[in-house]
Length: 450
Image (tube, rainbow, N blue to C red; front, side, top):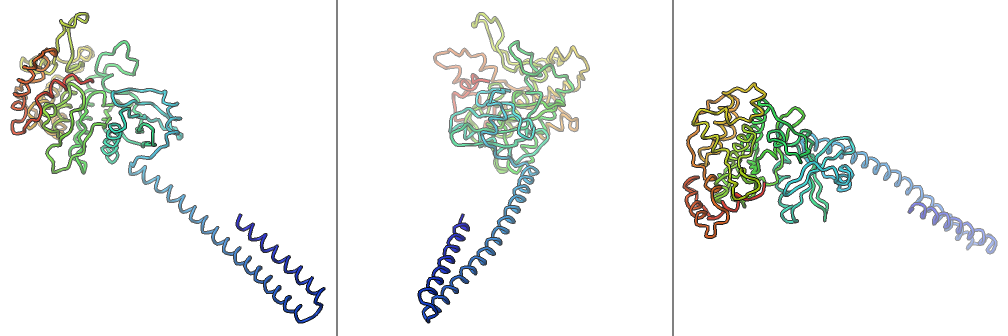
């Protein structure tokens, strides 16, 4: 546009000067004044042509440089995008693109207390799982940052791969993961409910043992092989996915914490799922990698027995006749009696092919992991060695399962005397050298939703 205006001004100027010279010739004839006007006009005309030539040359060079910069910028963006993919750095997606990929968030895969997951197909045909964080603005932002910080820079075959994210203003936070086809572990180890329409079945013993090793390796990597230790803090079957080969993928880092190598434990508010929370967390003594190990032990027991660790049994019609069942206590008793095969999922027993030595090893490891004194629990690196048979597994010691006492308490007790009594004795059952700051955490945490 500027070039067009400059050309119009130049042509107008030249035409006006030529007309001026012609008029001067007619009026002044060949006088001295005419030659002065003619010389000045020719000089201005030559100057205008020189300006146009220089401007054209400058514009040509500018366009050449711009095209070169555009080309280099395109190459840099391509290279940067390639390096991001190679390095596993998450990509920032537009909300509109993810909305289209998930059919306007209609392809529901799963839903939890804090997030909803949808299946989507990106423009390049990649199948993804889009996690929409449903919490309020402050808590949702905290969970979003925790998950990105924990998983963005880690690379492990048994950890879910974060492909990207979306944090558009005024919109829910979105996280984009690789899509894992076989869903979560709970659909494959617990009996299916009639209302459950997700993919699932009964996982064989061989596959369960392999999943146990996969999850142990993933947690060992987070605890020992990252620059900052990553505490998952929400290990449960719902957060363990199975790929097309039924190998385990640990997912959902919404509650995770980063922990320095020189830290022994960190303080955080009580969150998570009942049945998987370590006693020291319930007592607000802080969390460490040993808290993940406790949760892992609970998951192992559920994989062995095909049932929840904590559940209500009894008459469905009469709530007063119902009572809590604590599966780890049953397993511990059967182990002392030498009847370990009685705790194995009956559906798996019917399929056959179960090695009793593997059952014993898995039970021993699980009971070591759920020791209420955190210092007695093995590290995840040692758990991997135990499961792979590279280290002998001794019979675990007796442990006072204080969860049993909690489950036996009537929730409607008005004076709370028994709760206070258990809270007072609990620190001695966990780690006596660590002070407790709570006297009522147990009652609150044990009834938190799954």
